[in-house]
Amino acid sequence: MHDITFIFAGFFVGAVVGLTGVGGGSLMTPILIFFFGVKPYMAVGTDLLFAAFTKMGGTLKMARSGQVEWRVVLHLSAGSIPAALLTLWFLKTLGPASVAVQHMMTTTLGAALLLTAAATLYKAVRGKSTPSRILTGQEMQATTPRHWSLPLLFGALIGSLVSLTSVGAGAIGVTVLMLLYPLLPLPRIVAADIAYAVPLTLVAGAGHASLGSVDWPMLALLLAGSLPGIWLGTHFMSRVPERVIRSLLSLLLAYAGTKLIAF
Image (tube, rainbow, N blue to C red; front, top):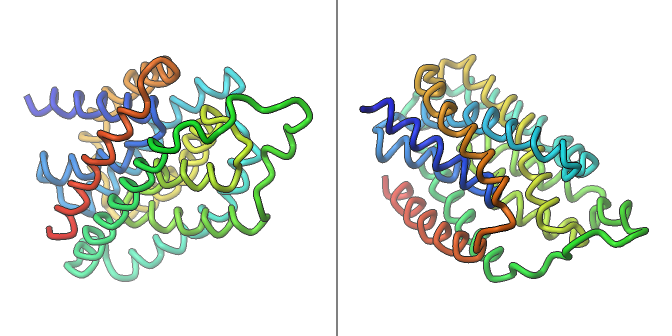
């Protein structure tokens, strides 16, 4: 019975990621902690590899249709990967299972979820603020940030947050991309957000695996549900009431964030 619930949880989260670009760590890590009783450090480590393989499936599908702006992915990865490696070194030094690190993880995760809830609600309210397509002659301008240093800075912040909590590459990443690349249409922003999360979560997940913070059998069950889920989600991305989904998600994430801070 437990196996089926893990598969169903993976499918649900994968579908939400495909539909909105939100949900990987934001939903899966709290689900593992609250519903399955998984220790925070094990939930974070397992979820990072879960997110990597889940978003890899979505990235391949979007790359085939030409939706991924690889220049944007490179900009953010240049800041996020080094920050992830530095955070992993910090966790290894302190020990991921120590009481201090566990408390720091749950508190930071709670704060990250509240930020994600705010970012998700912002996107729901400002749903029409991105252009419907890139205008002819604006291809280079659309993939150029407001300032060259901003993707490095925000990438580094997200890289550290993701490595510590597995949260940040979804709604926070989408909101950051909307602010840094205002000429990019929303489907391309979601595609870039999912694509840059793949190398980040792979690096962070591999680091956690080296620390013994990954439950491999549980990961396999989650992936069995998430890979078809994200395929279905990306397929129906433009056919669902995204504003309603994001509004409901923001309430759910705010509730989970508040519980984790008081955990």
